[in-house]
Amino acid sequence: MENMIFKSKEFGEIRTMTDEQGEPWFCLADVCRILEIKRVSVCKSRLKRDGVCLAEGVSNTTNQYGATTGQKLMLTFINEQNLYKVIMRSDKPQAEGFQDWVCGEVLPAIRKHGGYMAVRADEPDEVILSRALLIMQKALERRDKRIAELEPRAAYADEVIDSVSCMTTTQVAKGLGMTAIELNRRLCRLGIQYCQSGQYLLYAGYARQGYAQNRTYMYRDAEGETHTRAYLVWTERGREFIHQLIINN
Image (cartoon, rainbow, N blue to C red; front, side, top):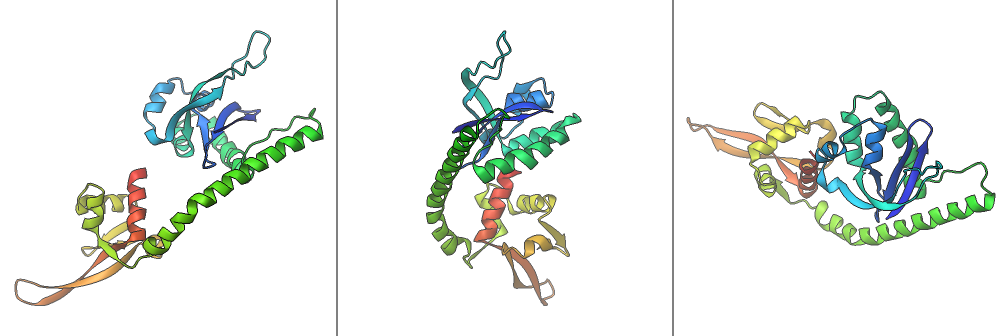
């Protein structure tokens, strides 16, 4: 993992690292300092566990002469999703500006160049160029690795994700350890579907994504009259969408 330090006149320094997939992680202690959160351990306990990790970082404390020590130590880092959770829970006035800085400058720099390079006015052009080339080289290495990892997944997407076979809500719910009633209620609360005349329908934004299809079945009432009722069945793409949705919510 690659360590980087982002600097802002308004917020000071925040230590970050980039994992092998090129995703950014942020030092929780620095985030809490910026947002004036005193109890870091309490903040950490409220975050998603798979978005928290310990990794080696650099101390940003200063010695008696005002110089950064640069001592290596283990730090708690949080992923981008957890970062937003911390920011959204903050009622400090600097929270909005901090999010704007991260979203508008830090993250685009990481994703475009594979790193964040703060340039000092007294640096020679040769030094700046060499650091820029190193960042670009690491970005290309990460890109090549991601491409190699995605190749076998592409075959899976072609054969399975776009499959025309469908599952009922009961089948999808069983795979998530819940009942169809519970899953339908969750999907309604999350704004994915709604119930109309006893039938669940997807909102327009999701209806065009290939997540589900409408099926009908025939039944007879107590008087022997025949009726039809429509219901949703989920494609493999829809099942995968629901699975990720429930995990993250």
